[in-house]
Amino acid sequence: MEIDDKLHSGQIYDPEDPQILAKQTKAMMPMYEYNATLPTETAKRQTLLTKMFAKVGEGSYIEPPFHANWGGRHVELGAHVYANFNLTIVDDTYVYIGDHTMMGPNVTLASAGHPILPELREHGYQYNLPIHIGKNCWLGAGVIVVPGVTIGDNSVIGAGAVITKDIPADVVAVGTPARVLRKISDHDRKYYHGQLEIDPELLK
Image 1 (cartoon, rainbow, N blue to C red):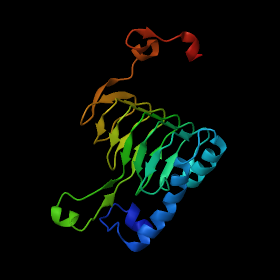
Image 2 (image 1 turned 30 degrees about the vertical axis):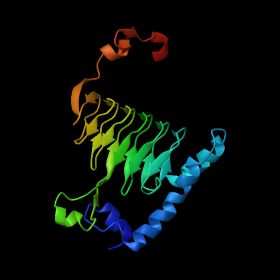
Image 3 (image 1 turned 90 degrees about the horizontal axis):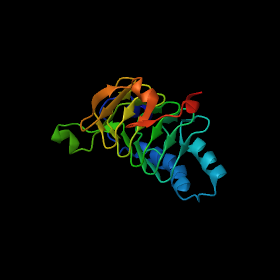
């Protein structure tokens, strides 16, 4: 089985395969360089982002430090994606993040899992399932997303939530494990937090 088949088929495999480790180590190198950049080196950061990720849309930016098993090699960023400090992506398979999605500090997107059966875990076996995050989503600080999850467009995930199942579009979800709290509604077009009103000029 080819390396890409092992990573992206969803089947159980040995991540300690020497061929996999060699390819993985090479993919991680630009990430370490990115994390060592100075705040003034904005052009260098943008250049490194295009080396690190499978795709980087216009205006997207990741605050260092950033951590990923494959350095972002299997991650596609849409346009104007923003992630705050300490984004961790276990990118052993594909992770897709849609346009205008924002992520707070310490968010974890984990595409890799290990079998529940201890006899298999003794061998270090794992499997990978892709993660899809839609457009215009907001993931609060400390959100964790597990393998195989899809989050629909425009949804908001409250800080500290653990997403173990798909989340539909246009909702607010909170908790551990996360549950849908409510739909995004006309109320949200008037108030941005509690009873703090949105300036109508901002919606023009």
